[in-house]
Amino acid sequence: MVTPYDRRTAEIVEEVRHLGRTYMRPMGLESDATGLPPPADHPLYLICARQGGLVGREVGEDEGDEGLDWRPFRSLLINEESAYWDRGVALSLPGPGLGGAALRTTATAEQRARFLSVFTDHDRAHWGAMAMTEPGAGSDVARIQTRARHDGGEWVLNGSKMFCSNGARADWVVVWATLDPALGRDGHRAFLVERDTPGFELLRIEHKMGSRGYETASFALDEVRVPEENLLGGEAFYRSREGFRGAMATFNLTRPIHAAQGVGMGRAAHDFALEFVHTDYPSEGRRRTRALEQLATIRRQLQTARLMCLHAVWLASRGLPNTLEASYAKLYAPPAVLRSVSVALDILGEAGVRNDKMVEKLFRDVKILDIGEGTQQVQRVVVARQLFGFPRDP
Ligand SMILES: Cc1cc2nc3c(=O)[nH]c(=O)nc-3n(C[C@H](O)[C@H](O)[C@H](O)COP(=O)(O)OP(=O)(O)OC[C@H]3O[C@@H](n4cnc5c(N)ncnc54)[C@H](O)[C@@H]3O)c2cc1C
Image (cartoon, rainbow, N blue to C red; front, side, top):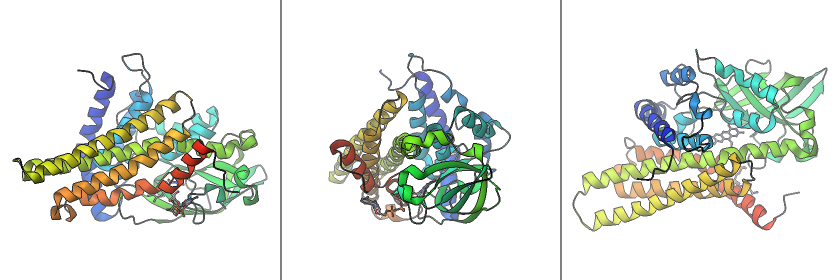
């Protein structure tokens, strides 16, 4: 039989399955009931800290047994499988998170080594985060108003940020700010702000309709002083619009991952519905046949979504442009996942809407897929620009 992955990748996915079943699904249900993310000293987070990730450091170190570099695919498949068990908890796992993607696209090698060194502490869990979104700037990140000014060999930040994933428990947050909003994208700069920096104040943690396993925080920045060397990439990086490109490149890396998490959630809904069909209509009949036909369609759509994610990641892993393919994946997956959850609800009937059933939770969890990392409408704009050269807004 031909396996779609190399042997080590298959083992890694199996390990994630075990941790998902043992920890992540129960943690997600608990968070959904309480509205709070798991505590920062949860045993699963300590396991991750000890072994350097959900399934250990080897994900980033070796090559597959067929001479192919499986690392980017492993990362995608780990995200898919962990979201199968609970996407909220998957997003809450320790590590640099979105901040890590920002470091990859903007920071110097020295900065990456310096800021990522905190994750070599295996005694307790650590988090990083990224804050781009502001009350007046979500989809249109060019509108950010958080100001950065240079003063006495330091940078001083003022403004506010919202919807920052894992922001409240993060050791550091990559904060995007502007030298002057009139400069548009050319004024953007990314700074690494360490927790407990005076003036960097947590305002609140949002109460979300779903995906409650991770926290989403709002901050105020009031005269926050950041050392000069925390300007990611250094000033030279921002000439010729590299700063804004850096921000966008971050999303080209993370959009396929985000979409792959959706595939995991869609698979979860599919599996609940399939189990229900087998137990509640075990013998042939119109109802069973119709349900299985619907689930076959869902499987095809989820497989299409997964292939789109893999393609986008494959391009990125070879340093090839993937803006279009990343947006294709992000555009296609969330509606496919929503259909999967809706079909599962239809099949379960009234049992599906009871909140002791996972499918009801998945229905609430899934909406964020449409919003985070570029909404459906924004992906359409990106695709139209890429395909037909639609102009940018002035
Ligand atoms: C749970 C959660 C976690 C998040 N985590 C992070 C994080 O860690 N870091 C971070 O920086 N941000 C984060 N975000 C913010 C997220 O990226 C934004 O919510 C998203 O970019 C949308 O911005 P907005 O909510 O301001 O909506 P808006 O941009 O105000 O959009 C509102 C509506 O208008 C539509 N729209 C906007 N512009 C256009 C256009 N040009 N053409 C057509 N339609 C358009 C949108 O599609 C949407 O339907 C998070 C959000 C959530 C909900």
